[in-house]
Image 1 (cartoon, rainbow, N blue to C red):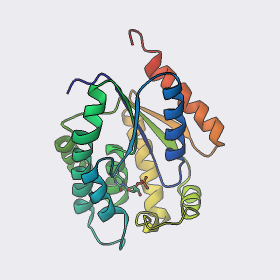
Image 2: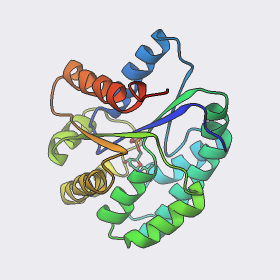
Image 3: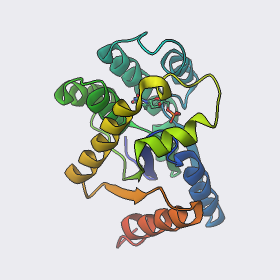
Length: 214
Ligand code: TMP
């Protein structure tokens, strides 16, 4: 696939404000005249949304770590094929609420699945395709869980996995950012929404729109 648009992913723990920041960025990019597609994982295509229901609802222990990673990878493949790649090839900017780093953080650092197993699955599902930019919204796990629990709803399977699980995946996201500084920007999400939004805009400008020749 030849990508003409840009693929930007938002990552972070529960209650980190990804969805709000994604919406704000989409609004500002649209105001600047770009075609923007907002999407999410697990989900973002009809088939992947069906798989999402299997993952985010029900008993905490309903899947083991490897089955979970396989389901997320299958959903990711369908999302790429049906939604992300077609949008990028027509020149849209695609903003995704989560992508492959979530599998590394949740199933790898959270559930303890070997990272090379996850890298292999992700490689199969994505064919090596990666985001142009990943914004990691970081805050202490307990603070994020407090925010997320206030939301209620049926999609709380992961929220019920305990604070230690969520602190491990927070450290996972920070390790990913250290390993891939060219792709990832860590943003302190404990600040007010407007301050986080300004940091997101600064990252977009520095990493994408200010790039020579673009
Ligand atoms: P959301 O609440 O951000 O929509 O995401 C749904 C849940 O799925 C969230 O708790 C994180 C989890 N998740 C994984 O465990 N692995 C993954 O690869 C993805 C994309 C999400």
